[in-house]
Length: 400
Length: 231
Image (cartoon, rainbow over all chains, first blue to last red; front, side, top):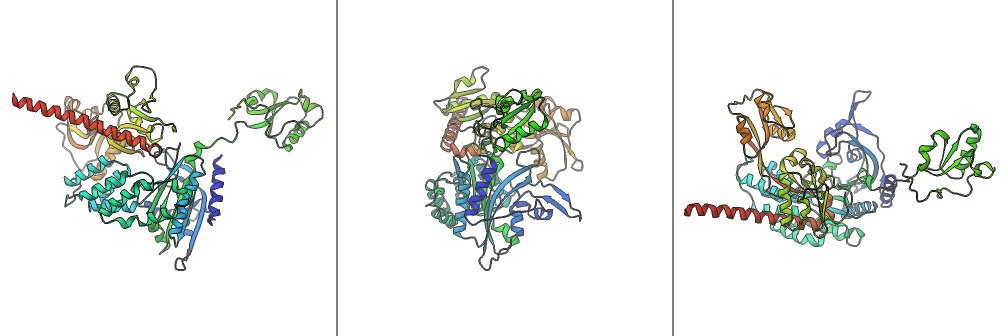
């Protein structure tokens, strides 16, 4: 499968669930991004000045454009469901410069209810399934982890450090930060650590597995801090998905959002075996959408198609079906033969004999204008082999 | 990225890597070939389901982040400098040292001047001084950092200090400890999901092996102290 085919099958999938395609311009006013930096994956943005002096940016993100340009009548309970397939421009983590990144995804904005959340999670799982490999969809609650960190210490800076360690599944890191608080290293006045909350943070950040394996433990830990209610939405969504194929693909990972401020409610990430990084990322983003559409809720995800590139099989190992070698034939005669072959549905390249050598392994069949009987008997040169019959099966070609 | 059932482990070449391998061996993941002098690049033990390879210490995090290795052992200095997107599962407690700021013995800081800092760790230095609101000029070097203040190339250095002998020999002294350093067991985020049981089992076994070693060492120290007292 090629990336374009995968992208097309995802677009079909989203359309089947009532999502409308959304097409946007390659650039937006820079202000849109500068005012919402905390919601962007990377700080680097390509900017340029438009003819009217406005500072513009090549879009590093799709979600902001969609929510800025979408009108949803929240009071009437309306919900807008949109999908996109766009290229974005940003510096991926660890990369040396800007890259054009192919991204497909969807957004559900407005009166988002339990059904919408379950539908988005189902579509996320089906998007991963489309890649044709083993995969998992990890679901977490960044709000719960943040709340537990807030119980450990009132200092927001230290909470950030704790959440960073939780995102790295670094228990020794959490202990070191806690030891720092106790020693007054952070400058916090009290220096006291809530030991129960600290243990809860450690347990939740390392919990990983199917809902059956993990939710009981999570509930026990959350209840210990009076936070059991935080799990209600997650449990409802999992119950809604219990009858779908997605139920076997979901894993619980409370550290999944990586300590980022972006998501509210449920956050999730998708991993496909054979790809070293996340392939899909999403979640609720009520805080962001409320800046543009008061009262609205939102949830969505992006599939980072570029990460799947290496899994895709190449289109063909050969450049074409027929290599037509000519030496002294008249241009009209060569053109006639090429037209005949092309009309028969074959991919044909005409080359002079002197340069034919370098193409020999890249084409299924070689025909010589001067000597090949198929070309000189006046019969149809395309007869006897079709597009699928390359005549060189098993030789591998390997021209690409 | 590997999809086999082996756990692929990137070991840092050198003394630290040998200690790390010893911990893996103790934890039940032996592959004696690893310690033999050979031209082989990859070492496997099918019974333990583990595959080792030696890489340059500063490259371990890259192998793990990019999924060529499921696990690796990297110094906290490397993890802070390159900030790879990996899990940091266990503090191995090996290769202990500290990141420190050192200056000539008679050095007096003038806060009104831009501080010239020679280092192999520009990101750690930038973050450390940004937290303190200090304007610095980073001089990135690849080795012989101690030479920089001696020749007037920099005011201070930020580097790893183990025993402090090199500093003393060059009439330098630690003026501030940035953070303690030790080797950490790191894991690829995708590998952690698809080989979850295997990775967690290994991390727990390593943790246990390390604790046992440090407890034995502590017991020996205590016994030695007791013996001295009795003498």
